[in-house]
Image (cartoon, rainbow, N blue to C red; front, top):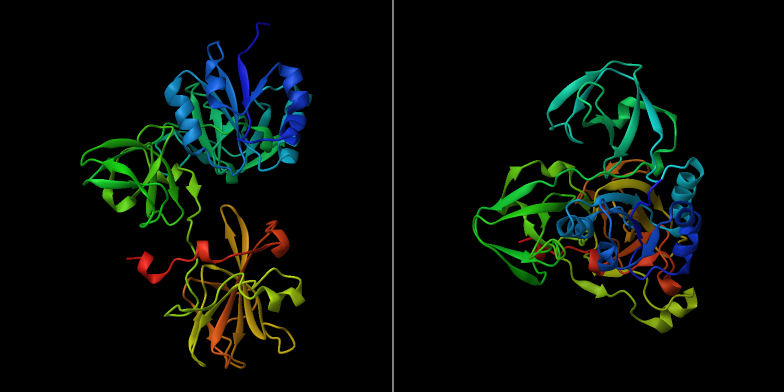
Length: 402
């Protein structure tokens, strides 16, 4: 068998753990590892296979940049947030002898449509009856769609994964396949910003009528990532200023918004910042204040900072936070919890297990003159703070929504 030009593109700054996790796969299929996209493209051979590791699950601009530089490239996207996850995927491939993770077979559990792309808005190109077994050759970025070879047309098509049952293989090792990115056109001259925020640095301007590939979107769909000024350096433009001229934005990778928390009180004035007064909090084993205190008049309404599920609503008078509410938020980049402390006894308006919306009243502020807000993220390692994060970079203040 002839040699296949194949590169494993590791995350930038990947240490020895990533290399060790890949070792058996690299040896089994004679794959070349690197962290430099330029080195990956310099390898001779056509087609060139590049297995691109996505630690955060988002193809972003790297995949588009590779595809622009070398259109014939075969991209094999691996969603692996840790070296341990990568080793599980690659070892399974090596054991099965499947370089690109083929070998998954599913059975349809209902009669379902076969579509030309991974979305319910994509055209229907066929149908499968319940009980039909098919081979899966790839999956969508969000894992909601299987790519198959349409038995009739013998071309790639897509079926909804929710209406199938796995009968052979491991879903995690199936490669993520990129469809043709949608294209957008600017309705007016638009500022292209570094981040999806109104105050983010301007990278340049997209002229009226300018067309670009869309590469991603924020979860509330207010911002769209576009290839600018080229596919290696994307930027963000407001969704309302764009016209979709090809494809659909619904199938794009979803990027978590940088600022997704609302202040818990209507007029947010900070009483005590995160990290303040280290001597006071040293007694608790903390480098400083573990949250943000917002000024609040006794009886003022306290609201949920974001959508989520209440995991605690209790009058814990023996606890440092006193009467408190805790809300869990499942975000694209992980699971967070917001803690609202020092509420007034007898005013709680929610209970554990209840789903709340952003801005929904939780209770009223107590007599201390402030409301405490703590932000936690599962698995975070913020030094001596542990899983506690500074809420400030995540807060969207009223002036930032204008």
